[in-house]
Image (cartoon, rainbow, N blue to C red; front, side, top):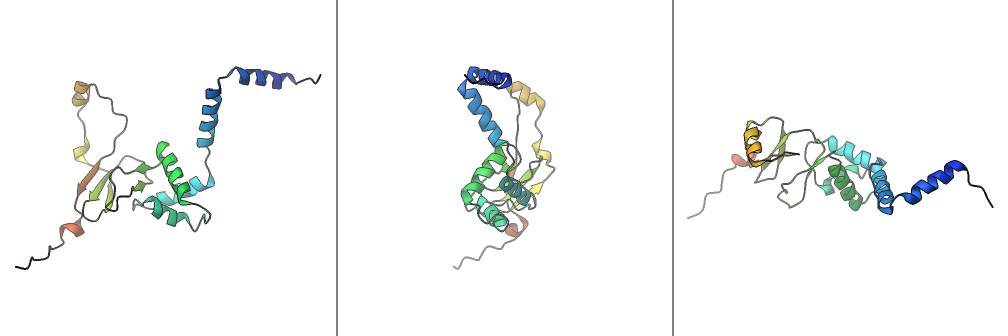
Length: 166
């Protein structure tokens, strides 16, 4: 009969007693928190720009650095980074219907042009304060919030409409 070292035997006994769900959940969390080279590059490249790119645009940005990367990997990493609150997925879809991403997760607001889809970051906004009395009145606790303000950019506001021919 082969003897098992005492430490290994204790470790095996502990693992046997743990529910399968616990060990699976722990393994999943460990895999998810691993900072991969791909994820690091995607995040770095996204933080270099303030253009709020789509997943396809991010794919094109990182392609020279990671030529074997697939678009599906971009989507998976963006989803992960959003869940980790490293990036923001803008709720307002652009004019082409595609989601846009912001590599700057610090508190700020977005001005979004309804005509051309341009998105601009602003750090201050006087219309974004909430009275604590209103929160207390409804028993509401705020966990998070992002405000997107829709309108027209300067370029679209100054466009002249063509004269209708009578």
